[in-house]
Length: 103
Image 1 (tube, helix red, strand yellow):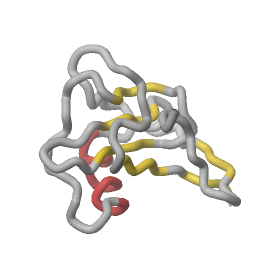
Image 2: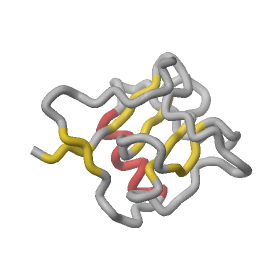
Image 3: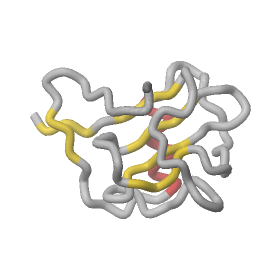
């Protein structure tokens, strides 16, 4: 399954205890996006969610019309899904996962 952590080598992942909101998420997503492939809309369906089942701090898909979003609840205070969540970090072939690494 591709729905798993893929921690970069030499990375000791950690999840900062913050209360970052959706605006903070957009700032980070725009820093880590692949060129101009991210959309300006979050898919509010159940794919993704606000969970703590992976070591990343966030992930998002770059599928064109909407981005499926997973955020780590230790770091983010906003819920990217409306009702329920799958808590999947990998939601599409073009998913970008972001890790905070202690060096």
